[in-house]
Amino acid sequence: MSSDRSDRQRQFDEANELGFPLLSDPDRKVAARFGVKRFGPLPSKRATFVIDQDRTVLAVIASETNMTTHADKALKALKARRGR
Image (cartoon, rainbow, N blue to C red; front, side):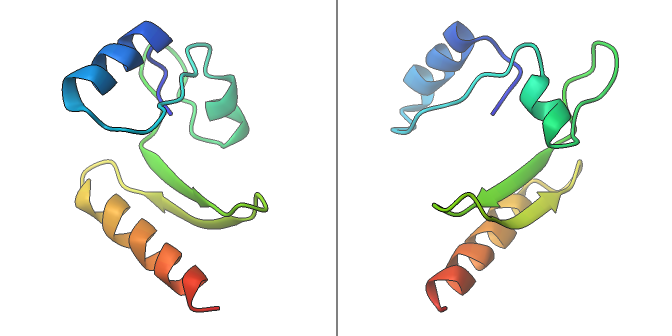
């Protein structure tokens, strides 16, 4: 989810052929509910939430500098979930 408007999200999706929906939170209400909203014009804190189908939060990954840790730890959480 990004604070970018949906038209910008659509352009990003088309340019990168992601193949999955991108969520837009331009007023940053969702970011505030998840505790990642910054004050002022800065974007939200960089965080990844792994959420199960039953809405259980399986993992929260937060790193402002190491982007690969988000994917690595999210995949680890999903694999652990599959192993249950």
